[in-house]
Length: 142
Image (tube, rainbow, N blue to C red):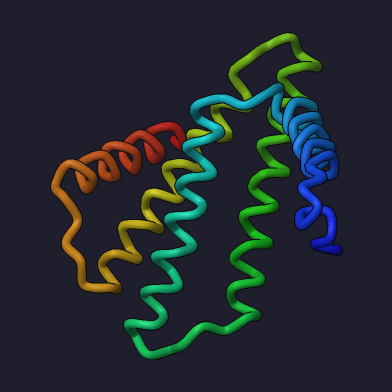
């Protein structure tokens, strides 16, 4: 990509790019929602804390590990997309939200584990939320 567009202050390319991004988001997820935003925030925090934990453990950053971590997050988004399409097909509005909440719980556990690896204490309230989520998950599997 040439930065000539930015140097000339021709913002039309960026406007078009943001329009395409918004269209894809609307098609894939039915628009932008608070829980979807929270999922992206959790993705970012998990990735950053995972990198920090690897550095703290002196394992360094490995591009293949980072690649697989990002690929997994992309595959999670495909599952969210699938949940949205199921909602559209069935005329419901809970499948995508359920998928997102499942992955939010999973990401929260991973974030707390990363903080533990770094040596940062986790507030009791977060540990209690995780325990509640794990208890509820076990109850649903029975």
